[in-house]
Image 1 (tube, one colour):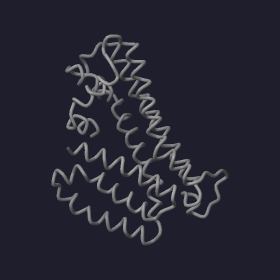
Image 2 (tube, one colour; image 1 turned 45 degrees about the horizontal axis):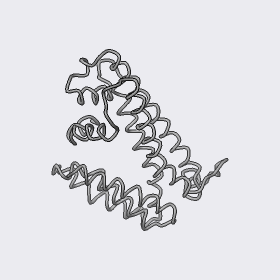
Image 3 (cartoon, helix red, strand yellow; image 1 turned 45 degrees about the vertical axis):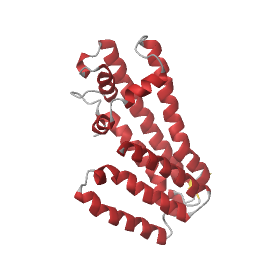
Length: 227
């Protein structure tokens, strides 16, 4: 149930953030910020964490204050950078010595074994794939930061009174940050599935079945994986 709510909030945020930029609407930007607050706090609120319930009115008030000051759209520029950068760090930190790479942990969970029990070839592949995801996401975070800096009007440099050497519109920025990011990630995910199916024949029957297997690991597994 919680995962469904989080997915709905994430989709709602992406839609509102894009429309806020495309329509230059401060009201929609405020709506996107409010949805973002609920998305970030959804899990701790559901777990009845006191700090989350105390933080909720403060963050909502902060979003309202930004709206009243005419800066509700400014944080939206940095959300894709922070989110994608955080996920890149989650992948990258599992590559440190003594830790099981993130993809290795997922594959091991699907096979119901410990990561160290995976076949050697699969361990090597999943470690390399974890590194590939970390690099892709880090690159996307940097591209998002660069685009946020040169977006006009209201980009990071424009907000500081600096004229960027190259510019894009806020709508163009939004298409990439709020929509194309997910297309790139989804395309990489599907392309890697096809490569893995060819590299390790017999492991997966279909892409739909693969997705069902991933979903079958449960929300608790995915939440623990990202910690």
